[in-house]
Length: 355
Image (cartoon, rainbow, N blue to C red; front, side, top):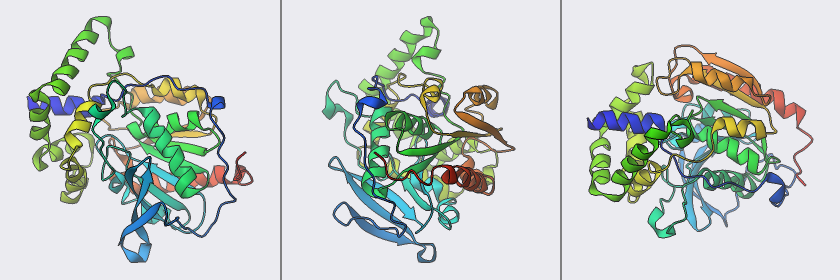
């Protein structure tokens, strides 16, 4: 029963409450310098923590954002900037098979969204009635990362709920995002708008039970084990040989850090926020969608509908791949990223100074 609940929550993505955002025109415009093609990060905002695989120059760093420590990885000295945005329960390590390959011809950054991975996990209760873990929060984090750290426009490469974050960021600050590649974006099937009226009270009651009673922490403790994490991953990876001990540890370890349980329980208490189909018509940059056709959580039959939006230039089927194509099939994803970025980097190469 516990694993059935874990699967339900993990796959249907109970996500943070969303409050309507101001229109993009009401936000101040960011100004970027001409891109410095020699990668550098200001020491006043960032601290190098470690270097992983010195030959490939993949570095782990921290960025001070609004007083919170945000962990990210970076590699590459030249080319367009890419920001890799993880999905629910993941972190920047989920892109470990992509960063070195893409860094050969791009400046690559992979970020831990606030509350995830090894970024800070502020207790949501400290914000009172104001929801902190929202798509607006994460989108703002993503845009300000481009301004403060990258100091340039960027392409967003996103998986699962990271795709909703990328779309929201592009809507808030359209001059920052050069293009978005969505990998199995979350359909958000338990969004309150997608539920029949008679099921909405049950969803809210279930969320309150998990968030406000001991049941939630018991539930989290039951699923925060190697065995449970492996079982959940084996549901969403078609090629289960890719569910290695390393991957299990990558997903599990941040979930054992202080504050992780409170953040997790806050996440699953919300089923509002933006839907992809609400954001796609508002996006001004090119969008490419790729979908693993064996995804049991986000069925490709439903995902195909997103290919009908004017902003979406193509819908690519990734055969025999599950919910996390970037990790399960990097040999398919990395060339797709490279071709998408090359196509649109040329068309916007003269627009790096934003006004």
